[in-house]
Image (cartoon, rainbow, N blue to C red; front, side):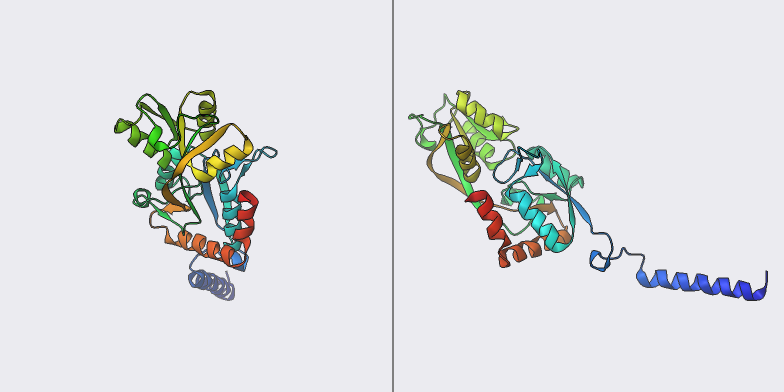
Length: 261
């Protein structure tokens, strides 16, 4: 091979190596035309109006879906939605099988030991619900040792029902995988009461007027947040920045009115 050709090839190779070194081999940011990152986000869709399934499209829907989709669009990342049991959400996040939990999750101190939460976006609390027309139970104080009381697995409602059982206040704490089954059991008398989040209970009451009712005062104030794996500050910062932008530009209020008013 001629010396001139050899020199030319070496120069091309040198230029390619120099370019690779300068770019560091990193993906081009989405803002510069590269692929946007995709995060896997999971929910348990029996918690309306936060998490449910659209009757027409059979797709995941709710306040959490709309808010998280808006945050993703604002921050330039994509989402892959996953339907998962509530009690499996945190283990899946810890194992790295999902990236975000968006499932009406109370950002409790106990959960903060396992995951990191975004800025909270909804203040809630627990209530006691009974079958409509039940005059025996007017508040949590009227629950007795011969009663079965329900709660959804992995929730603070289930925790409170379990605590009432362990202290002898009720006869059994019946913990359900899905809230829809718990509501059904409440209506047919399989349980005397259900301890659940206030907005979700109200949503069921609105969808089936005259089926169940809330008794007594709101218990155990809670605040919902989106969860990420412990230490994932990069993703957490994106969610918090997007959340603040949604609040500032009015999108948060629009989504809130859609689902709560």
